[in-house]
Amino acid sequence: MSLTGTISTNSPNSTKDILRDAFTQCRQTTLKQFAELDNAAFCCQSHPEFSPAGWHLGHIGFTEELWLLRHLAGTSPMQPQFHRLYAADGLPKTERVNLPSFEETCDYLQRIRDEVFHYLDVAPIEEQKPLWWFILQHESQHSETVALVLQQQNLSALPFSKPGSNSQLEFDSVTVPGGEFEMGNDGVEAADNERPRHRRFVEEFQIDRYPVTCGQYRQFIEAGGYDKRQYWSEAGWQWLHENGISQQLYWTNNPEFDNYPVCGVSWYEANAYAQFVGKRLPTEAEWEKAARCNPQTGESYAYPWGNDFPDASRCNHRLFNRGTTPVDAYPDGVSPVGCWDMLGNVWEWTATTFEGYSGFDFFPYPGYSQAYFDGNHYVLRGGSWATRPWALRTAFRNWYYPHIRQIFSGFRLCV
Image 1 (cartoon, rainbow, N blue to C red):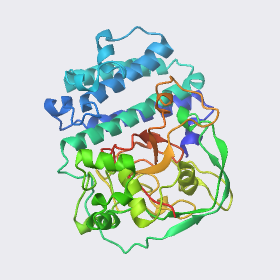
Image 2 (cartoon, rainbow, N blue to C red):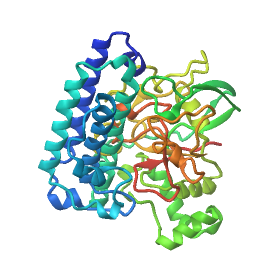
Image 3 (cartoon, rainbow, N blue to C red):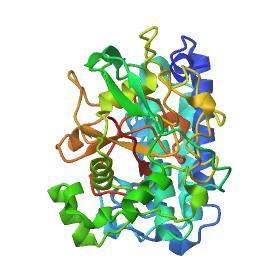
Image 4 (tube, one colour):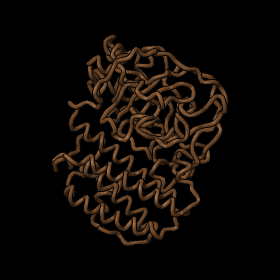
């Protein structure tokens, strides 16, 4: 059953059961990431752009309490002393290292969750569904951030699954017919920046069948791409030299990984590679149309394969493989126009800066999306191997500054 079909059911009891199960599954996956972490790693700020893993865990609980208990149920703060520590606008990231222990944090989260599930029994869920799904996706997004924070602590263990067979790929492009399609999402699960669903016209274009692979990107490195000014934007060239960058962040020279997607590249690097091969990054509208639109029927699907909820047979996500997989590993996940690997594995940079669609209305507060409509963030699409299924769909939009490459990001190109 599709995500949209599942959560738009008219039965309040079914909705509550679905939510309870999803919240439980998501939390189990989140806590599993901390199973072998010591206190130093739990509190470590491994990169100045990101908070410690332990802060994200506490913030997950704080946000759940803030919106579901205080905002909806009208309760008093459970532990007021945690407000400044775990609020998104509280302490600077550099000061988020003095944290309660993992055990204390888990106790805090469990007490919140017990109260949340108690309230769910009596909640007027049909009126509240968007906020409940927002909180589920909030945990999904922060637990993915935990995965990349932990990756920064152990860069020697690159995020690649075990190498498999290196099949001979045909690195061709597919043609996406011109015309209008349904872009965005009005489902109850939609983030504010996915709304409203609208008609969008896109000219005919060609897009690569696969994301750019490590084998392809190696040609850029070996050709001196990081030393040649002509491939780089002015801002990208400055960033390159100020930071001494000479290859992607998660790089391996092992040819056994040649068919894996390049992972750990900034927007600057993706754009430079596009210049090197004489192509370009897709706009996010082009990416979304290639991912979801059936050119025969004009229907826009929730996922490349249709409307069935993601599982392990269709794409690499939810930490199933503990890293990336070959770009041709999921034939059951191919999009209607023939693009592979458009959900999961690696986020894909687009040429589009992050802005609201016409008719945008913030939810549940301006700081979630609207604060980033500054023209300085670029949209990524598709999800990664660490993305939870509740934050994985063709309409979902991610955004980062163009210099960020610590995320599990790659790209595919257009002609």
